Length: 330
Image 1 (cartoon, rainbow, N blue to C red):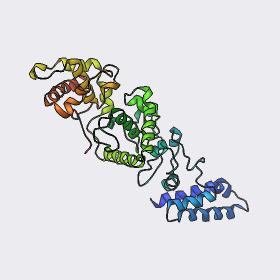
Image 2 (cartoon, helix red, strand yellow; image 1 turned 135 degrees about the horizontal axis):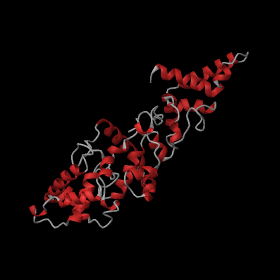
Image 3 (tube, rainbow, N blue to C red; image 1 turned 90 degrees about the horizontal axis):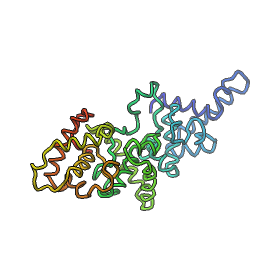
Image 4 (cartoon, rainbow, N blue to C red; image 1 turned 180 degrees about the horizontal axis):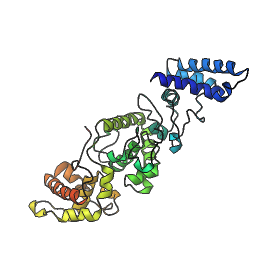
């Protein structure tokens, strides 16, 4: 925190207590009200912990969750104005055990410094690629990487890994769940899946640990972003191009592989995009489990076919990025 943050916090507390426009008015009572509010502001900010500061603020009606300075809202209105980081940390930390899971993700309560989402940038919307403080959709696959959230989510629990990808996209973000599902290429009905996953984790007593793991993963991705633009690949990997890429390779180079080109196309799509074929309307739920797992765990020959087809798909799609076929967090 800077000295400017502390000074700004003092003025915001004075404003919330007495309204700066009133205490600065040229009347006889303005000076006394200003001094009283200033003393209260210093008392709040002089406490050793966020909870102690919040207790004093609550007794005097400050840091109102329904007020202007520290509102507890998780939609786009949270971005309408900058929020003082010191007051935000006090208010959010004091409420961390009662806020909803959506708020815990939006305000990054698992971090050392909980905070509001960044305010709306002063530029045209079409110029905004990613707002600071949230995980860009470009770095999130449709289904989170195997092992990324073990032991809370098992690798073979594909729906939970997809729901976890949505949870990751919600960190520091005011995106609606329905928009997150849409951007990740998941069915619209999947918008309720994160809530079901959180309910299960809370029932098992593991939600706080999973929230911490998601925060760590978000921080890791900020420090070491993948060289894959998953969002661009989801748009670029049209079924016609995937089929064309599969048709371009010779499967007789590995005669022991018993996989037809339709199955290979589904496997290529999910490998290239980080998704799962069951969530793609063109490949559906009948993509065999053995084909989905073959290239990643067992059959090096299938992996070779997918890699060769992936190179062709990358060329046909116009190189949405210059990363490898697959990627895993370090």
